[in-house]
Length: 346
Image 1 (tube, one colour):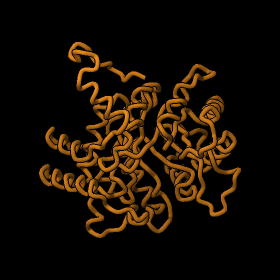
Image 2: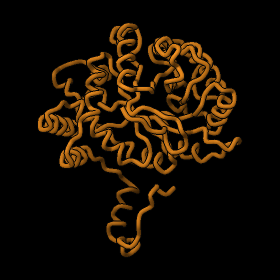
Image 3: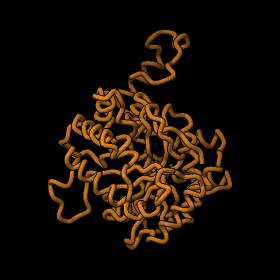
Image 4: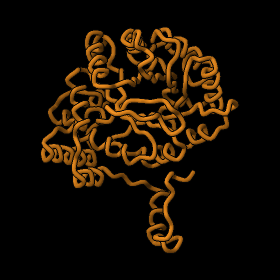
C-alpha cells in the first residue's frame, strides 16, 4: 500500500485505497460485526489507513462499528464521513439537507457514534438543491475552528458548484475545501468531462466510489449472481458489455482476474492525474478484500491499458469536442512551439 496527500492543498496523508464501510452492519447482506472486524483488521495489516463512512450507512451502525474498531489507534487513521440524508421512513425537515444547522447537528451525532473528538474530512453526501455553497463553506470553517473536523469536501456535487466553493476566499486564509467524492470506473467515466479536470485545476483530491461499477466489472451478473445493480434494476448496456468483454479478455491474457484488471487501470489512471485519485473499495468479505489487495501487485502492459482506454472512452460533448477539433487544426498556429502548462489552467 502506498500513500499520497489528499490533493495539493493539504498535508493530509491517505492510503492508496480507501476502505468503504457501507457493508459494516447487521443487515442481511452486510458483513456483520465479526466480518466487519475481520475486514478492518486485514485492511490495516495491508497498510490501509483511510476509511469512508456516512451517517446513513446501515442507519448509523457503520459509524458505530467503525468507532469501536478505531479504538485507541484512532490517531493512526483518517476518517471521511458524510451527512445530508437519513434512512428513516419519517424524515423531518430539520434533520436532513446541507444547511449549517444540519451539518453541526450531524457532526455531533457522528462523533458520538465514531467515539472520537474529530473527523478528518466531512462532506455533504449529496447536494440538497437549496443550500448555497457559501453556507456550507462557512459551516466547515466553524467546525474547523471548533476542532470538530479538520477539512471539508463535497460528494456528488456538480463541477460548477465545487469550483465556486474552491474559489471562495476563506476568512482565516486557509482552504477548508480539500477534496471531492464521485463515481468513477472503466464502466463510468463521466467524471472526465468536468469533475476530474476541475479537481486537477483546483488541486482537490478525489475519492472514487464504485470502482467495479457495482460489481459489473467482476462479471458476476453474467453468472446470474445478485448484487447492487440487480436490486436497482440496472441492466448491462451494449457499451458496458463491450467494456466487460475487454476486461475479461485482458484478464485472461494477463493471467489475473477482472477485479485486478479494473483496479490496475484505475491505479494507472491515478498515476497520470495531476491530483490524488483514491478508489474506495467496499468489500463484504475478507476474500473480496484480498482480491482488491491482489490488484496492488498487478501491472498491465501498455497495449492493455490502451485497449481499456479505447473501449471505455466516452464522448465528452460540447464544448470539449469542439475545442479538441480546433486545437487539432492549429487554432494558435504551430502547436509544437507552445508547451502545455504543468498544472491545468483555471
